[in-house]
Length: 104
Image 1: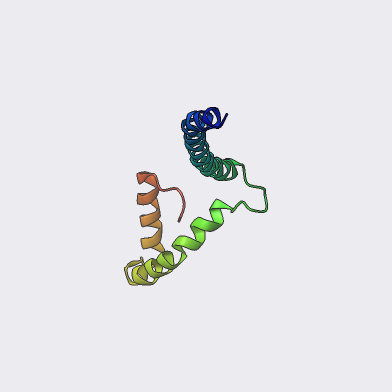
Image 2 (image 1 turned 30 degrees about the vertical axis):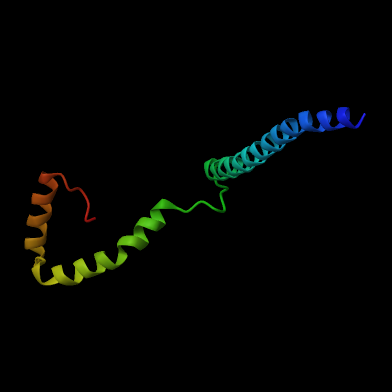
């Protein structure tokens, strides 16, 4: 009977090695799939529409972004602006003919 038990253990060793290998591969694949699910969760969170509180007004963002540049341009262009009312009206007519309908 001891011979049968030794033969049974000898045949069981390859099965145990195979089972350990399969368990290791399964553990590695589980870790990889968890990483992918985290990435999918991040993508889902980023693709979700923002609430009204989280949304920024694009008009305010543009105004703040270029406010310093506009102030600098106004300061530098002040000496070049027309001084008299007739010069200003002639310039306004030329700009209106060119397609500029407002001061901005």
